[in-house]
Length: 439
Image (cartoon, rainbow, N blue to C red; front, side, top):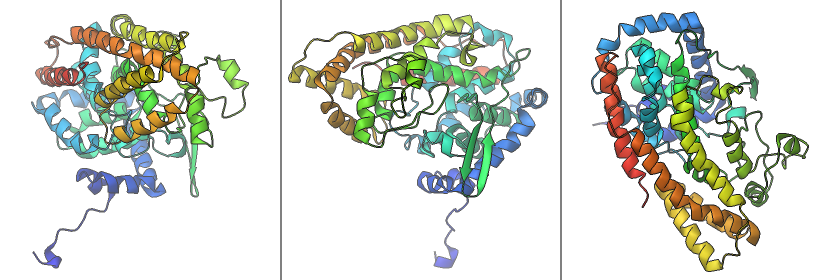
């Protein structure tokens, strides 16, 4: 082939995503122009599908598309995602999303929903969180389009020849809005200022449950023994995270930030608010405790549509494991020897590598190990308490979730294509559960 005949390299953001050129797509999305392109595309989607009448009209069209859903929909979509999975950073591998999707699909509410709501719920919950492969997860307040909206944009490109158009639109909106921000966020990049507005997500007459399934999937992942792993990995370096009300400031010094994050204190909202920034930021224990406190409070927006199955049967046992880890860290520790702490930390790090198998996990864990060794002895001893408890919590999680997903969900009341999709998700969930089996 002569140079004149050579295939031109893809240059547009759409082409880069279609080709799986993740690094080049990252560069494009880092620029204000690429960021704005995604934001404007999502706004067009929102105008059409987000209003209740738009959702219902799109769903009516989607019902006619269920016969067009390929029998291997899940497999095709999973394979399209593989290049991006490899670029997910430590703390965001999302390997358990399919497990929790499978578990949530056992909710009795499924029998009351129409087949389109169930199909969209399953697709959005399973594939919602690949955005951190393309943009930094904790740059939400500085971007026009956050990680979820970026992935909604990318999913449309990857799935448009697999999913029929109206099923796709509903899935895209469900992916885009799953972070569930409740306040307006103003962003300025260059000479452009935009205001990101919360999504309209009210459930009316069983319409728009699909917007909540991905959030339930996220919340299931938040609880149990794995959130401490995720938070310790993501906060080894300073991040601007959301604490339910605001984005937390960070320390100028990485070491000072890490020391604050690992501090053994639980402050109330008012106590934190009266502290100067960045001391007002949640530390890791406060972040973990926030989720326990908000896990089953229908007065909060995050739990307002929780079903009895999700809140009681599914979530409560995971919240219990989550709480046990916090209590273990807070427990007055013995004075562990240097050898005891080293052995316990090594076992915990091995579990982190299994449960968060990202490309940068080994490097992140090495930094964590070095920073941990610089903490005061008393702080190290407290966290060692938690690390000792972790294998038991991991075992309990494995048994509890395994019991919930041991059989294939029976969705015979729904369209045959939905049952086929759910059955494939179940098989993948069983395989993923095996990869999460305690060693």
